[in-house]
Length: 251
Image 1 (cartoon, rainbow, N blue to C red):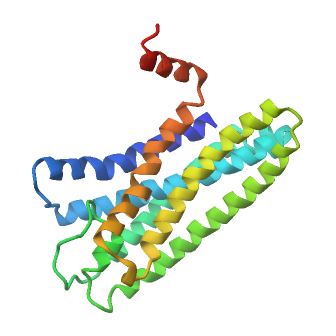
Image 2: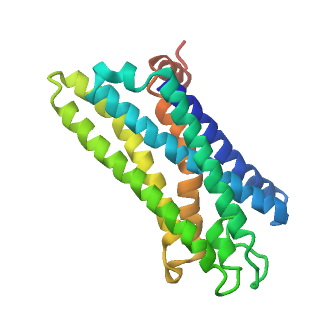
Image 3: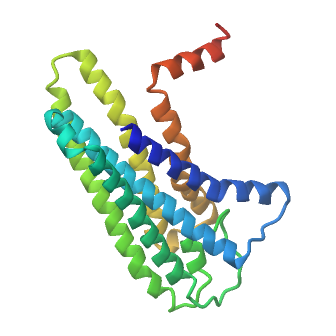
């Protein structure tokens, strides 16, 4: 679990650093400029880090399933080599997916100006600038990615159904509480991340508005990476005690 948390922390840090510093710079210096290369780099990195995050969250769900439902097989199913292979597969698949979307999007001719209605370079906003028929080339990969997101979500829901069945059979109330406190925050962040990103990229154009687009983009690109460190670090009793001492001023 801590190995996967390390990888998840790297993806969270990368996704936050891809969008937030540039947005803060633009706000402080009252500018909205970004170079063509910078925009392409931002699209690649956001797809790379968020794709890695989805894969890692799915793997961590499998880790929870094995630890709760098949504890005696944990060492066999999730040994160090298996964990390394799964993490490498998550990073590699995210890299290829990001490369495909970036190359496909920035090969489209832009016919409607160069002003994006978002605080970072986002594919739906870039497609609005492309020619009326050329954007269809990117719809195929986007729909493919949506099915991949949906498949991960189905796998996560199915795994958690099995986990909750096993947890409810635990005779100790303390054991059930510990299991639920571990699983429910993870499930909430996964649902927020997948639902908002799925809706952002596949919603009809008639539902698009600047305020709605902004809220959805923040919910899938900023909120989950910001919440993950809080959720997983506060499970550490020593860290919770240190935070409590800082809040109360007791040493």
